Image 1 (cartoon, one colour):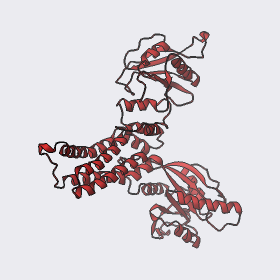
Image 2 (cartoon, one colour; image 1 turned 90 degrees about the vertical axis):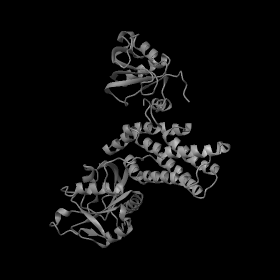
Image 3 (cartoon, helix red, strand yellow; image 1 turned 135 degrees about the vertical axis):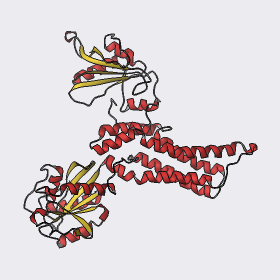
Image 4 (spheres, helix red, strand yellow; image 1 turned 30 degrees about the horizontal axis):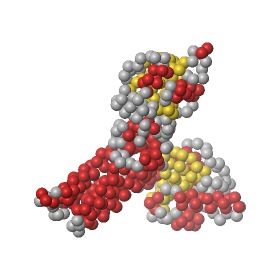
Length: 456
């Protein structure tokens, strides 16, 4: 898959200026190329060495070099499983790019996106699931996303798949023996053992898939629309949840004419809040278009905050909106402006749902609203352990394995010939192998690594 003599180079730190930047080399000639850049300085394995690195573009008058710290990781004890050298120098993009040009002039090739981690997978240093988690760790914007990514990085899903796969492998071995050695008198027992093995595997897969929705919400984030009549305080609540004056707030109805978006962290969930136009029969053309966009936004959202005015009470317009937003499981009803009424006078339920009482002005009830929103996005009460499945690729492959095992279950119960049962069992195991990267087509690998940064 990869040229064995190919040595790659890339900047491994984010674009922009910083105190320190890192240039990474990996491949059979990484050490030799690094020594050429470092003026022949001898590197000791896994020891930081102070040196000067050649920067193409600097003149002899500048000495052509920058101060650096270099570390050599001999194969196979490195990130990629190959010889790796990491050179840390001043984090000026011009200097870092100059070192990369010096390395390519010495025989290295500029790395493609994710190629360092791809080599780690090919060389058996990481599973494909753990490699995908590397990108998720880097991209995480909430602690919940980071915890989920670290759990994947530590191999939790791979271990679960291995536990599901092991009994299937044993079953396949027994069925294959029954086919390959008929003259030896060996025959696989048809007492329902095959069906029991398959049923156990199906129950394990179902448990993984049942938690996948929660995992995807944590990993990919969710969209929450803030809807309501004009002047119930939608934009004020939006600003309070965001923690900044993002939406214009006035006493005049119809101020919001478009859908305003902002990303926030809600109890560890990466949430895109949508502030929408007030729902009413508008005559103004711009406001009418805003109402249309508001309806579209709430239809596409993962959850909806229906905001009511506690001071005005429940109106016919509120009731019509609550009827339109009928999905109780994804609908949170909020009494805003609760600071204007005495405690205990606000109804605790509306339309059969518990209501969150808040004040966007004073902040009263906002923490409870965030916790309730997090519980709705999870689909259950919040749990401390991260879900095992969060990636749509993993979900698709588990569903593919499940479909094959359902067919295998029917065949096993019907005492079908071993050849037919083996076909479905092998199909399920191929899905497992593709998930963890044991046997993965090149195009799937390319899709996984295309979102990586160049130096990762």
